[in-house]
Length: 99
Image (cartoon, rainbow, N blue to C red):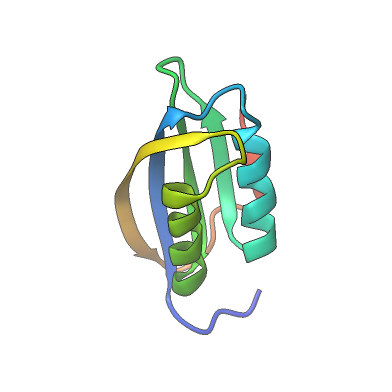
């Protein structure tokens, strides 16, 4: 993976109607399309949480997707981003769904 700019890592939690609407599958697909790594999983509180890592501009596009787009039948009320930091190397080799 060629890294033009600094690598970023950010944790996220998406609130709204995000379970039972293929949200994780679409998130995985979008992450692979954009070219970021990390993971996504459902929580027992009915939200979706995870982490995204990659070049800064790609992480920004993924954040935008997680805040505004999501899967076709999802409804995103809000997305919280936390622990945003610059990292020296990626901690994951791909983007995966966790159970």
